[in-house]
Length: 354
Image 1: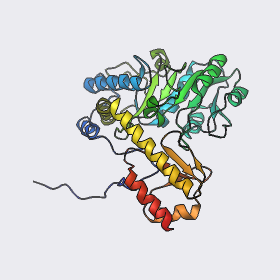
Image 2 (image 1 turned 180 degrees about the horizontal axis):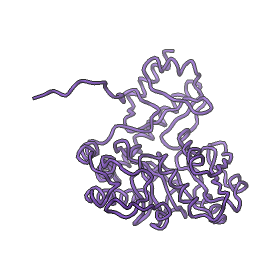
Image 3 (image 1 turned 120 degrees about the vertical axis):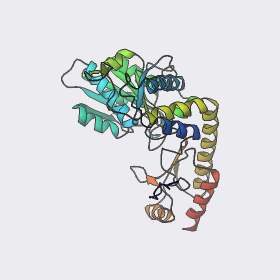
Image 4 (image 1 turned 60 degrees about the vertical axis):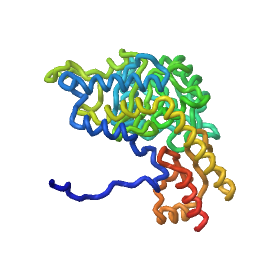
């Protein structure tokens, strides 16, 4: 039997502390391999994976508090956020559209604004990194097509006051989009109000390939109504299906099947257990860092930011820890499912060694 050629090994996870992706669930890995060569972008030909995608979207709706959602499995949060802005722009009646988001919003909104020729206005946040509804209101005007709320910011894990922002959007006649790309698989087990059941959310980004433990790429874009997806539809004259609302055309069914497999294996009990473990780890790390004299932000969700010096972070990177920093320079540790208490103990030991 012929051996597969040797090649480079992928990144191992035992020292990865700042990524919002994680090791896929075994069932998700196996499903992804089975559907690797299918194309949900051509549902007329690849009917099985189209059905799988519909089931995955329904499961995501259960996570996000909505029955019978519209949507699809995207390449990730960036695509979903771009699509939300595209829906808002296409349905609006203005020649000078703008989007209002908190300064904590993901950098993908800057990409969306540039691609779609939309002005992006960013509002200051409060001391905990959450959107201030009054600051958002000050930036909204008659040309505002979309208001953005963040449910689990990528730098600090902060959760915006989603119902209040939904009211701001409603008063402006604008679409309200929630970016829960990372936080969406933790938030159902908290007291936060963030989803379709809690507020008048129109669209949402929620990514199975983050805390959902699906393989990359497997993001999620959800809409309250199929009419919102109609704003994205273009004709596809040479395919069996007659229109397409997705941003990309050909898509691998691997992410779609992997997302469904992870959701079926873990929702809700597995995700609830993982939230508890991840949050316990984040709180333990925050306590250890405070004990050593570091100022710590959070954790509101399983993410810890701390004022560890740049030379110390460089030392930790030399020791093999894969770390990133916030925009203002703090150490940023994301307690994803692969991050264990044993890993964190080793990390703190290396921090003490410096």
